[in-house]
Length: 72
Image (tube, rainbow, N blue to C red; front, side, top):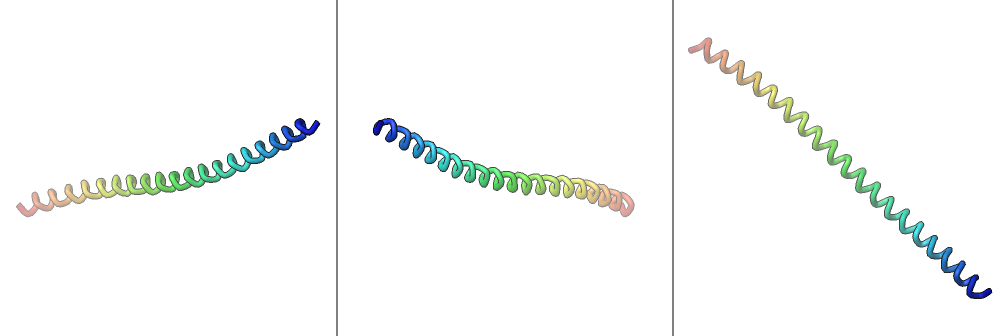
């Protein structure tokens, strides 16, 4: 009877240990995912701003060429 009790206690403690470990791992993983998501959002914002700047530069170059043609 003692060996069954010892095995049950060991099993319960092992289960508790695994659950605590998984909980901590899940918290770390969620933090990493949140951090990565924020970095992706910032990257996409930079890409959008760069695309807008490229469009603005194309318009500016066109305007400059038009002015050169009028002057020259």
